[in-house]
Image (cartoon, rainbow, N blue to C red):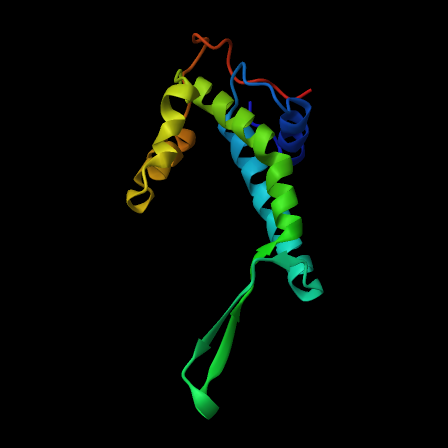
Length: 146
């Protein structure tokens, strides 16, 4: 069964640190979309209010021709949001691996491969592919919304 946007968000947050069981593609991707939308909204709010840290200024040229280019730092609200969803994101990602009958702890190390994000691309493909049909070593099919 496919989860809706709202069901997915509710289910992920109600299983905030649950690393057991399986997660459907819809549960994972709706939560991912929600996370990105909230992060973008927080960026839009943070920048005009100056709620950033780590801004860098570069001087290009010299003398009267010099131009100062400011690169805004990290959004404070975005950082708080990222920390708030770190655990549920890891949990739903782990359950998504379980849906493909894979142990997340054996494969998340791929994120450490820095070559053009190759590890992240491999993980992305696994999260996109359908899970195993029927029960596997991690339980019955993905959880159904309540």
